[in-house]
Image 1: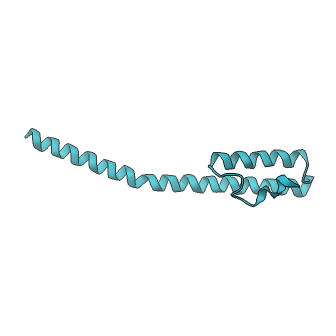
Image 2: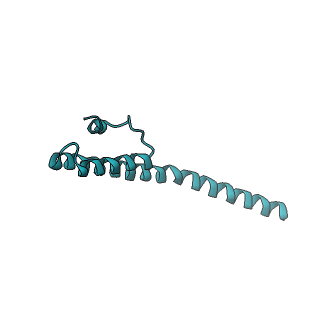
Length: 89
């Protein structure tokens, strides 16, 4: 009887582990999608600030910093995207 309960308990733990492991990729994908959305929004705001106020404006510098923060939080390095051309003008 104890052996049967032990086996049932181990099987239940195994099933929970498999269920949890299968849910992880979906959660990671959601996080990636949210990160990409944040980065794209920050890029759009930077482009808008450059267009409205100029490349070296205070507003563009602030938006550049926000874009870099979004990239850092999402694990992107500086050389990953094309929009940091603004940093070099």
